[in-house]
Image 1 (cartoon, one colour):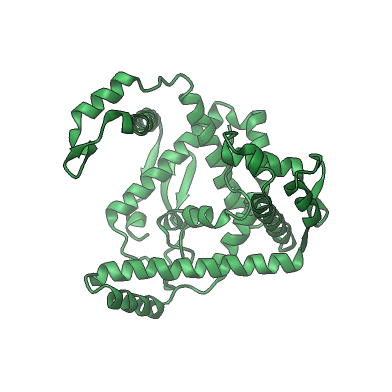
Image 2 (image 1 turned 60 degrees about the vertical axis):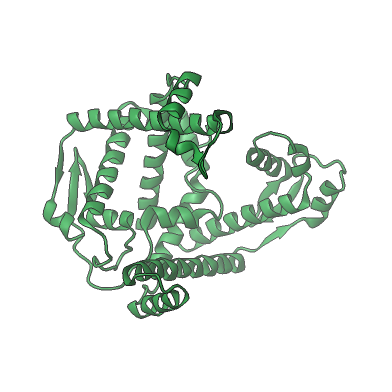
Length: 359
């Protein structure tokens, strides 16, 4: 199974999901323990980041009590699954060690990005209000609340893009890369190029044609057109740009002393937890029964309102595979929810309601 916590320059989306977007800068509550899961503590900072409030952000971000509780429940479930995976020795397996090693570059990049986001200027209320005003001018049906919420997201995402662009710019200056365009052109002309041919280099680290081919084949899933894409100069150059940018960023992160920092430690904890939960989930689902044709047909007949467009019923044949995927997903979700409930029954979990309220 391909378990990649973070690859290349795709760290932005992962980092944004993992630890949130910038918020308005005001007083931050103390980093108290908001929940204890057996011997593992979930701190206020972690919950705030999960909710989308970065370090130094304000609690006044429109987050409801129910949203806080739901987020905490998800963090508790993740802790329980990680603890169970470790209890089963999954962290001692070769698969786990190999997956951690494969994701080392992504961890360095994510940790660096995380550090830069925390130290960058927070979104100001003035910026949010100005953006909300523009949005309401373009769409006068927007309520003040909707306009402010959309404006906050828009301004925050713009700030994240600036951080990302600046990091890439600095990394490329500090750790330049070269792409062997002559070799890429030979490939596109159909000339013989061996898998060990070097297509790019970053600080002595080579990117070979064999590696690029493997990545491109993975993208298309080995289906029709795979022979064309591994010789397509546009596809090859895009893959090379991704790889050299990722390698430059990882090398730059090391030069910035990210290894050993609190950002790297937190990112590694997140990465290991993600990998272990993925491995445990795969183990739980080993004997998973596929959704049968009968189950697909039964759901289709029981929910006719979901398969109607403009007053006409969509034929089962047109939606059967998509419906099968949905039912399989729901079945897996049900199995995992039941598994988590069993873990909760055996666990010692305490929640500090006062700390939760102040998040």
